Amino acid sequence: MTSTGISVTALDLDLDQDLATEREHLAISRAALGRMRERAEALFATGDQVAGDAYAAETLGRTLARRVAELADDPNTPLFFGRLDFGASADNPHSGAAADGRPGGGDDAYADHAGRRYHVGRRHVTDERGEPLVLDWRAPVSRSFYRASARDPQGVAVRRRFGFSNGALTSFEDEHLDRGEELGTASRILTAEIERPRVGPMRDIVATIQPEQDELVRADLADSICVQGAPGTGKTAVGLHRAAYLLYLHRERLRRSGVLIVGPNRAFLSYIAAVLPALGEVEVAQATVEDLAAGVPVRAVEDPVVATVKHDVRMAEVLRRAVAAHIGEPTEPIVVSDGSFRWRIGLEVLHRVVDETRREGLPYGTGRDRVRARVVGLLQRQAEARRAESPGDAWLRRMGRSKPVTAFLDAVWPALTPDGLVHRLLTERDRLAAAADGLLTAEEQALVSGTAGPTGTKLGRTPKATKWTAADAVLIDEAAGLMERPAGFGHVVIDEAQDLSPMQCRAVARRSEHGSITLLGDLAQGTAPWAAADWRESLRHLGKPGAVVVPLTVGFRVPAA
Picture 1 (cartoon, rainbow, N blue to C red):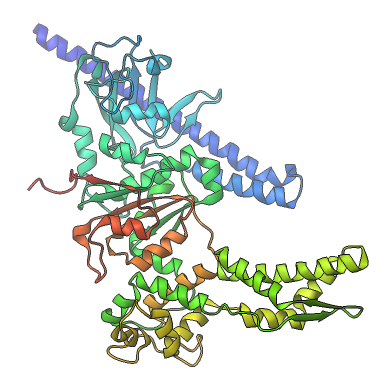
Picture 2: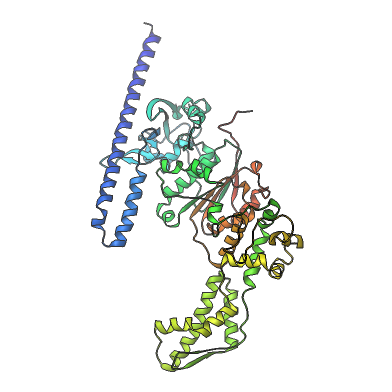
């Protein structure tokens, strides 16, 4: 046998041994994950015995149930997909500052990992001593799996990618970054994974995240971003993986405030539903805009001409005016008797209470409660001065429900419901004309109220008797937001956002007022009459005008032509 033949045979033996070692590590890691789940299940089964009270038991139970779900293992999904071998020394001839200013491979930032080996996978797996067998792809050191290159090795000597078939490890390939070797698009495993035919629900892309995608996935929680991308550029995957990354980095904060995925329809949400659970994230809310604006049942279909007017952002100001128009001025003093004394609040003081509350810009319902509380507070101070003691809670509640106080409230700050407000606006021509003055033309007002042109809403004598359309539901949600602020999410991902109307954007914005967003879409794919023409406009309606717009230009699942 020639020397060349001997060399190839020896190399084959080394590769076979290496593959066997990696398969053994996979088996050990799967067994360890099974033990982690068994421990979590045992804790879940006995959690109520160690909790101090019913509330603690319920909280602990939810936490342990979530932990059990997070540790689920799909044998057909690779537990790890890559490996990082850091050089024995921080010195690296190819090191240097990265393009974005991060340190290169020769920097002390990677010295702690010198000589270490890490398998990178979908979740963190440890052995019985707590030593990591698989590192979560979101861990800081895992960043080098996606970002390291021959030009900027980041301390990595060898990056290994694994090939799998139905969960079985079949192959691997190495890139010796310390020698300046990088496969890039020549990687068989990377190319095969990217081009694997799509069958069934959407899969995660943790094994194939590209550097430009990784930059977006690991963006800070405080940053709102808009990702513009044509089909096949991976924008949906970027949004979902960013949600998973933020949940990993800000676990407790986002567990309290929540993460919301907004999709164009239920079929789309069903298609992407398996991605986050595959990454160990099982508590993410999913909804369509119709789900968010579900204050009334939708029982009619609107003509696009009418719906376009209702979806216009001018309707937000029309509704704000309509709500504000219900606030009146006091016309007479309040006189209240508690059975022992008669208490009086003068007209001037009542004017001041209403004016101060109006200037505070509170939601309408909160403002009504504030006016009541201030009136009762004025009565309380009079009682304290007369009796030299503070009246009890029962007295305060009785005063707040007394007929004079209730009549005053109904006159200057009447109770409203969102559907009731919109119903009155659409059925009372004078009320609509006053709220829409200078905003909607007479023709547009006629379209909205259904008195001319194509129709959609079947207005009944009452809100419940009305057959509302999807556009009406968005108006009613806007009205609800003017009355009471809805609970917000810590982060919201909005996919296929090019077809969101300004009013739909505002519905989402109310759920993310104090959080950040990831906006995903393609302006070229807009189909609705109100489809976005400029992401800046959509971002303004979403309350995030400062968000950066980032294009993804590489199509991974479409032909080059």
